[in-house]
Length: 379
Ligand SMILES: *Cc1c(COP(=O)(O)O)cnc(C)c1O
Image 1 (cartoon, rainbow, N blue to C red):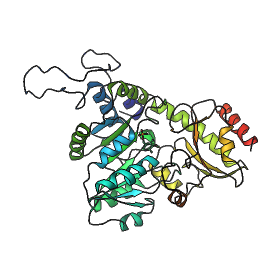
Image 2 (cartoon, rainbow, N blue to C red; image 1 turned 60 degrees about the vertical axis):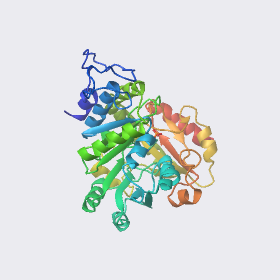
Image 3 (tube, helix red, strand yellow; image 1 turned 180 degrees about the vertical axis):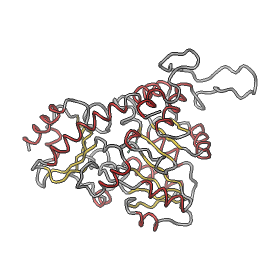
Image 4 (cartoon, rainbow, N blue to C red; image 1 turned 45 degrees about the vertical axis):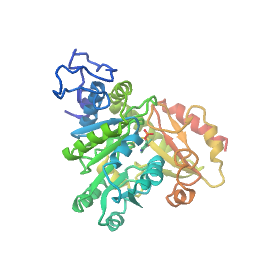
């Protein structure tokens, strides 16, 4: 089955009980047990719910995994995946991960005795040099948020396998439409499904997907033990969003390419970050492992131009956190999504105070360009 078909027919695309072509929302906390101690399929809503299971089967299908788990947020999914490890274990983490992931590591997981080394995972030698006797995993995003850096996932997976480590990839920006980390050798994929998979800025959700049976069993245990599960209502909404992922991504990317060209040739723009830029240093790796380049573009205005005035002068493009929805969203990472990263670390990693991140939506391209032109004229 090809990808677009899987989006629609993957997993349980219809209700096994009634044949309904849209899976129902089973809003139940517990299920009747016909016999005592017979190990029923459904017993308690945290351990399993038919609507959530339908979504999880769909998520496994579209990432070419064997098991998927749905959580109340991307952060909950990431927390549960890190709970595979124990006090004293060491994990190598990419240096440009989502601000909330950095906060989870720095302010929460370190208190529980997990050890981390932060490196630029594009530098394979640096990753290999960071491996210690207690290293258990490499965790990365590609493309990264917000600088769209690309890590060679199959090379990292090879290094991880050689040293007996798990490789974990946050695939939120690329989505399985563009990139399948499990096919590239990774062990676990995580998603903030709040973004492209949901696609309509109307829910918060997360996913973890694996193709390794042992990891699958551990994640099932942790999902049930920690309990940060996705509700039946949001599970339904998320599978509904996933069904149109391919058409949305095609349209997002068509707009993004045009906005990239517009920004690249704009004399008020100092720098544009987009994996589809043939001049970008990671372009060849992006081309090798991604089908398309996504629709997030980051850019910096020329020195002296007013970033605040620029973003506040837009009328159509919303000044808001988040990304991947049908509407275009713009934000300033230093003040918004990445404010939890200490300034010195943030600047060192290239997230300047002037950096702007744009999530290109599905509006008519002429309207988007006109909105940007209007804001450029104000500065
Ligand atoms: C938003 C985001 C997260 C966190 O997901 P939530 O659903 O907001 O908890 C993790 N990783 C990336 C890349 C994100 O963009």
